[in-house]
Image 1 (cartoon, rainbow, N blue to C red):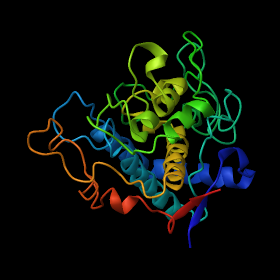
Image 2: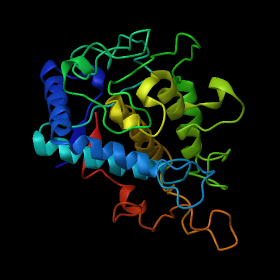
Image 3: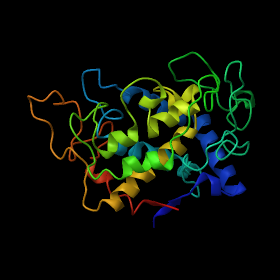
Image 4: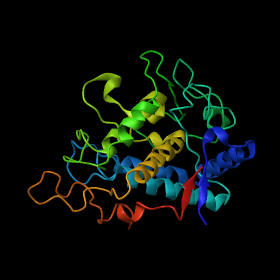
Length: 288
């Protein structure tokens, strides 16, 4: 029977407590840091040679869907009642709304160094030391809304701009793709500053701190953010019945994307699964 992923803003006190407790247990066991390492390993920009699986590529959505499932399975081994909640950033848009409460993810970082001081993932609680990353910092950081150079979270209309595109993805299948749902949702734009970050990408920038860059998994909000992104793929599929993951077949040998992106029926590293096999998850979970 499919389990349910809920809106973080609707969780009961007990549901919040169990979710946090399961995350902390994965961290204690060392399992959580494996997810950070995996995301770092597959965080390859399209300026690099070789295969891109996690970002700036069609497989952005199925890759993160599988990563979420792996984390969820680990959490449910600790507590079978736990599922990953989602953060609706088109509705909960302030620095004190869900999920930034003391009983869930804690709040913003302090102005001096962006160090998170509240909630169960604050370093001073002794349970959330960062061990994997691109810097040496041991504590979780956030800079919600970037007060020194303010940006806003994406709006419902900006999300709708992505959802209404009937094509999953389009050439050149990277961060410069101007057409297709995938890149409009992932959020690589043109120009400079905050206008070049859309939807998914702008949320990472809005949270700031540890959420910027390949080690963004260090902030537990990563999972709530990506659960909401995954929900958009779920909604897009239902709006555009019959639309499928693209490309259906691998780019040919003369194409600059040859060997660099994953087609619908190719294996998605590091797992033995294809994007096609991840398009329908209705028997595993659903969204409330």
